Image (tube, rainbow, N blue to C red; front, top):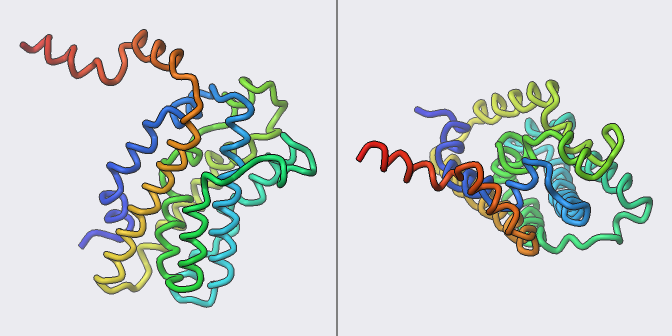
Length: 236
């Protein structure tokens, strides 16, 4: 029988690829976001991680939640530090975070009614390659003229060696949960929903991005969508 994390990975592979291929995620990975868009990303992620981490702590006595309370992985405080560095002490009221509302509301519902399903969101937000979870902060720092780790603590933590070891511990912990088949299937469906919601967030964040430069860069580089055509012509 496949482990729980293998099931989650297989079941969400398509959705994760879709999320990482959004224009906003592409710009983030290349360190090409403008300051306004980057701040908006951090604000929405802060709302999301704050809700998840609160829900995990609130339900830490739950047998399927307690083992997942790993503060070493948590991101809320890092995101707050970044926003404070970029916006000052009044950061909380300085930027909208409405793009994450649906996901935050879902986490609040699970906190009260189905805490066991929080495990799916912990896996998605701490252990997958979704945008913002595996990009270094050096490119963003250069693009925005930031010094040191100022404003990029969240991104840098995501790629830190200790972060990798803690994520491995999270995966082991998930695989050791004693779950029946119904519970495993429910977690898989919740993980799919979580990834789709993250994709929706990145699509919303990317609606106002200029696309001309991005399209020109992809065409100049050959573009991922042109390569299959080139290969087909070579073999015909």
